[in-house]
Image 1 (cartoon, rainbow, N blue to C red):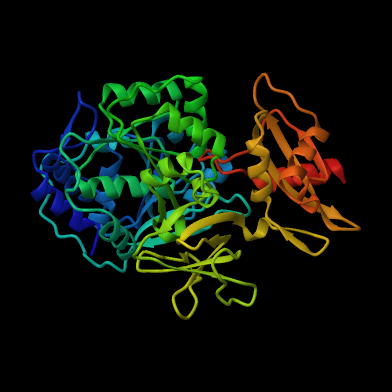
Image 2: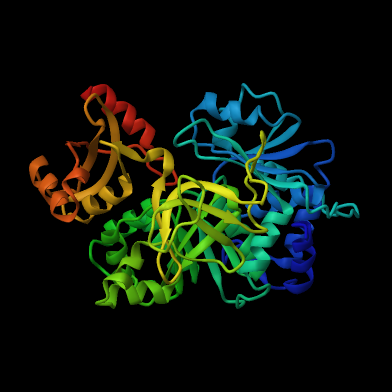
Length: 495
C-alpha cells in the first residue's frame, strides 16, 4: 500500500472527526484531505519536499502532500549549524524547501527555492485540481538523515511499503476514540516524529504539536488540550521529572506515555512511574532504518517490574520489551551464528517494515536480514536487552566490555545525573575505561567512592580506571549521547 491511500481512508472514515490542531483551531478529516490535495498540486516539477523547521500544527499536510505528488518527504535537522544544514539540503537537488521563518533566514547558501511553510499553506488553492496519486509502494516516501553520533549523517530511505507494513502490523485503522489526542514533542526529522504522524492519522487520533519542548509547557498542554497519549525522548522525561520535584503530574487525561530514542536511567523511570500513577508507560525501541518501532515494553510490563520481587522480572524495566510479532530477530555471535537466550551478540532483524537502505545502497544481506550494529540479548521470555552500539565496545586486556553496563550502574548512584563510559588507548591494556559523569544538583561524591560503588556491583575489570566530572555532556537534540565527542575530549585530555 501507498501512504496516499491513507488520505482517501481518512476522508471517508474521519470526514467530520478532528484530526489536527488545537481545540481552538481544529482540522477535520475532510479538511485535511482538501489541504493535502491542494498541497500536492503545488509540487509538480520538484524531486522532493524538504522540511526545515520546528514542529507545526499542520506538519502532516506537508508529508502527505509529498506522498500524493509522488515525491519523497525529507525533514532535516534545523538545529544543525548553518553549514551542515545547508550541506544536507543541497544533497536534495530539485527540491522545494519549506522552512519556518527563523530557519529560512539561515538558508542563503542553498541552491533550491525556499518558501515559508505558513505562506505555502496560506497560498494553497481553495479547489485543488483533480488528480490521482501514483500508488507505487516501492517508491521512496521519506528520507531521514541518521543522527550522526558516530559518523557523518547517512540518508536512510523509507519506501511506502516499509511504512505501510509498520502501520498495518501495529495500528488498528480507526482504533482511537474521537476524544483522543496525542501530543507530539519529538522533532519532525526524527523517525519517531514520522511514526507518530502516520500512526495517529491512521488510528484517527487528533495530533497536537508542541513547537518547542519545555516541561511546564508540556504539562500545561496535556491539561488544556485533554491529551490522552504522548511520546517523549528520555531527556524530555528526565526534565519533566525534575520539574515535578517529587509531586504527582496531575494530568488525569493522560492514558499512555511512550518513550524511546536512547537509554533512560532506571532512577528517572521509577520516579516517573510514581509521578504518573494512572498513566501506562510504553518503551518503544526502533531505528531509522527499521521504519520506527520493532520492540515494545508495555504498561503491564512496567508496573510488574517495579512491584516484583523476582530479579528477572525487575530487570525487564531496563529492557526494550518484546519484539513485534511481524519482526524476526536473531542475536548472533562474531561468526554470525545465533546464540542461546541470555547470551550477548549482534542484533539482526528481518521483516516487511525493515528498510536497511541508504542513498548509497542496501545493507540487507542475501536473506533480507539487517544488522542493527547494536549489541544485545534476549531473555528466556523474549525480552530484548540493548547493550549499546558495537562500535562502542571497549576491549580491555582482551575482554569485551559494554559501556552501557557500567553506565547503568553509575546512573543508579543517587548522586549521578548522567554518565558516559568510553575506552581510550592504553599501551598495556589496549584500552582503559574512562567515565565522564555529571552530578545531580546539590549532590557530591568523589572519584574513589564512585569507583568502589561500581566495583561492588561489577567485576574489577569493569570498574572505570578514571572518572572525570563534568558540568554537562554533549547530546543530540533527541537525547542521544554524542559518545564520539566525549571520547575525543577525554583522549586528548588524558593521553
